[in-house]
Length: 315
Image (cartoon, rainbow, N blue to C red):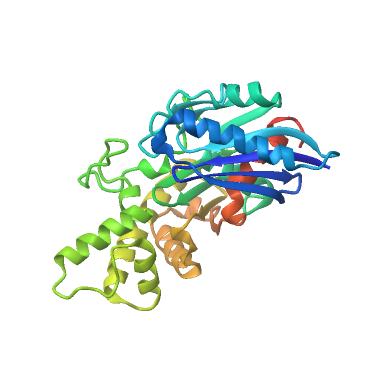
């Protein structure tokens, strides 16, 4: 059997898995990133975790390569971190590809964490059979990936697809990550929804039954809480405005939405789709579908590993 090793590096955890050609995880290892301890410590955990998975593979297993998805902006050609924010302090400049290939002698591919999710969706999920689509990942922040003609669009420095930093209000609050005002991430991410909830609590004459936490707010909204509905209404309208802009710019066949915020379910996606369709012209609207991400919580490691099949000439 052929396998690839996938690794997903985030600000709080690193997940490493062996994945077969059908996108099935056959073994995994999860460990805390402890990013505050510095990049050498994160790199050491990555290498030891890959080594552990390799040591547990059966003797007859053929390991074709290693794929890594990492938070931050990645120079795909060199497999080096072009820029990483406070989520991974000191991670900028880390030569992930070179270090992994030096240790294990296997072909290694490194990309941004949302780009590898797009790879997973393209090969195994909602993007299967599509040539042109966008991935929007709604987590603590908002990540994005653009697929055109079946290929990830990376831009000049690996920064294409930073969809969370499209402004939906040029007079809005200043974004601490990019310096723009009114980024959609400030409204429709988990942290953005929590911020809106906190502002509502500060201004409310009657305190809501929920705390300023995105999951609590979303659940209260689903249960008919009017104050939570105010918050979610702003978040959905902001996200719809941004997605409408993406659609007019890229004319995709689909926008695939995943991440923790989207796990609120069909009510969220239906409301979002209604808002998006009200903000797009008929010509682009007719080609587009809003789809939930399919691969799920393992999309990061599956997509990271699938780079080996996609870019190594195995598909």
